[in-house]
Length: 500
Image (cartoon, one colour):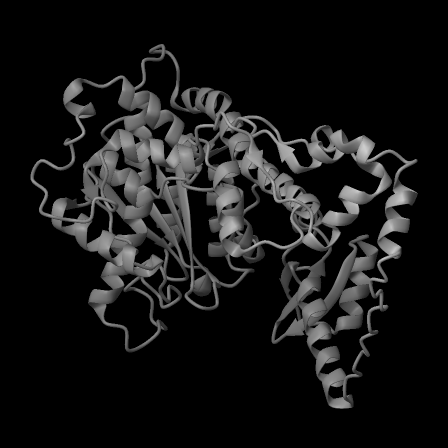
């Protein structure tokens, strides 16, 4: 079964075995777009001032991956109703409007230096594509939490502390119909598999195994920039209301389920009662995040050392040999054999040379080249410590013996480099120009303007703003900035109405 077939089978199985996910508390969905009123955004800003914990998630459009949606869920430690804010960047008000300025004030309260931002994944990677809309800056945030990165280690400790009923291997299979056991494993075995293979938990699996609910992922890859808020006037037509409602439910459940997982982890802990939610996750990050990151780097190191090993000892080998060797190196659960691993001997056309050449007295060196012990799985394979090449005084004898066999040594034929046609060079130059032009506007400022480009450049130089390009688009001036730090600095220095 391929990846997508297995994914569809898992969706069907989870849907049959578990109830659809619903947040157990009260929440309200708020949209941020051009139809939002000043009173609504001001109320949200006041609530954000009184909150220190937020869950965030983002969505990108199918095919284009255009940054299309930001979801923010407030985390409440009481039973109060939770606001879920859905930001639609394509339908934002103009950059010089009071409403846009109120949106910026709202995000200033979320990304304060004393807030904790939680995400299933890297929060910075999630938010970076949205910086181009000049809604917020994340440079002040001191505490980002990647819950996905620490979940496996936390789950391992939690599952081992539970009662035998929860640890029972049939815990999630009591009323299950017949199914592929590879799709649904007992919790302990599933987590051990994740930790052994160093694969991160998906949010859907975490909801199933921790909350016993089915979080649908059928709408993961969709066209999100259609205008989900029914109050919007210029939405994408021909999209049924039911589909919009499904997308709204999916977007809100993503952050609400993470919200519930975070509170479950915090309430299930045995830490001091005075330890806050943020302090608890800082402790988890300190305890689990370093081990997770180091365990993820280990396979790459072993694979690189395996490549060196193959280059030194294997002139010709089949694909089956590659798979077999990789299995011994990467699999941490492989039990080392007590017998040494015999490597293939040198190519047959040189065997009689090695046996009849003057280096027979130094045969111990060749034996060290052809036999090596199998190292334990946790040990580092150091090729330099295992290989002992013949001494310098025997190398000329070996070279002379090989040369006497008149083995042909034709120089490699020099491959003539074909020259591109004029049309191909022109097309390549155009593509390169477009690529560099996009890079110039990777970080940019946008300001309303009724001035020409030369005048705008003169004003920017007067303010000592280092820009890469300036391009007008209707009444908006796009100013390319070299780095993200400079963009955030210039965003504060340059007034919004400076070019009007």
